[in-house]
Image: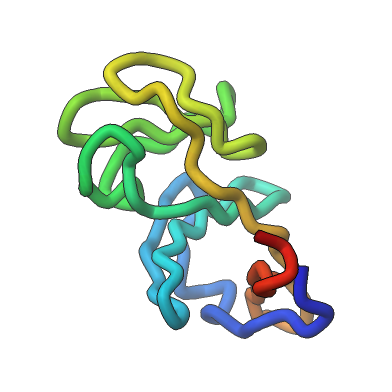
Length: 111
């Protein structure tokens, strides 16, 4: 991972229990706000090219559901938990400080 976090939004731009999509370079990222935690995962469902940020967030189960075909993804690991998706989506380290939300993007050496 890169040493420098990339600012993605302000805390107040994402409601608790909701997800919002942000495009950072070639990365599509769904940022999810919990009560006392934040998650950042790849925004593209691994089954088909649909935005995960448009799906339902379940903070209790720590999942997000693809709105199109119903696949559930873990917010912590990115793993697909239900069909039709079978592949994980990327997860990003997220940092929140002074009202700003930032992510650590992979570097070329991380591939």
